[in-house]
Length: 369
Image 1 (cartoon, rainbow, N blue to C red):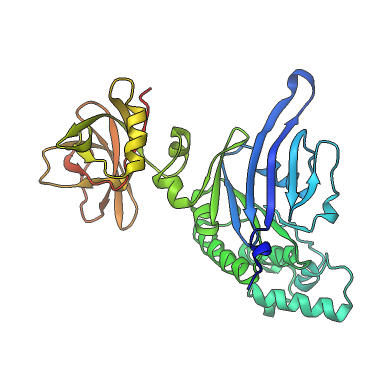
Image 2 (image 1 turned 180 degrees about the vertical axis):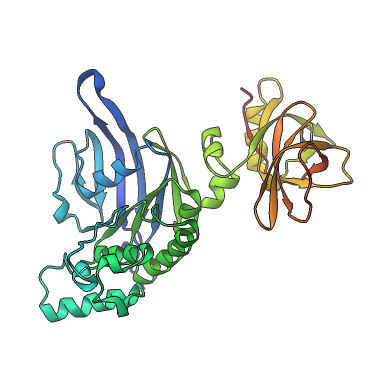
């Protein structure tokens, strides 16, 4: 059982970190007063598109990139400021790169033990075998990288990064070279392994499924800043901005109006009415509708239900088969488009009109543009 002081330990903390590349008029801001933190033993993820600054964050934490402004702390020790940078080899940080970067002339156990220092040959060998057992590759110790699959190489790279017992593990899009099925399975395996070992980790990726499968908390990065740091559930169901709502999951925005009837707050849309019962949802809707009563509501595909008995219909303009479901894009009478997930035995054609109704537990609203 951890002591109370250990429970409060922050494995990683960034405070107002700024980084720019280039010189003079070509100078470009990459990180803009970036702040977030990770508890000891937690798994965090920075989720963002290419160019959002994700990899620069990892380079800064690892000590490969100096900061212009702000501070970086690892286990409450200051490792980066504008005037002082602790060398990478003294930070006790492990890194798993996108391309694995295994040594082709070394076999698996030699790759895993490459970074070990201060141990006898026998102790290092035992530790490497333990790690290979942990990642499920104990029988491959004598194999060379070219004899392994992509998933196996990724596991060797992970074991090598864990071998020196780092305070923090950094993962730079480690599954991007793998096929989607293997990627999701390895993400879940990696989460189990990190939790079993109690390792703190920070992943960067552009793949939200990967982020949601692996991380305890996710930060959506946009233009060098974390727009929202939260659980996957809250990012999807309670995004704090339209930019986060657009980036996480699928959905659409529909014009609405806030109204009151018999003491109940209602959101009126062309698809139907949504009662707003949650106090925080109502508070946000009231702020968004403060000017003239109009607002925008975020509707996810699972908020709109196919219902043949509904008088409200939408015309199918696109359809995507997802196995158990179809994702239909529907055009409403106003010309607005919405998404709905429908069981795949309801196989409708393009141009066909289907009945729909609202069925949303959370009412997420934003100001009208």
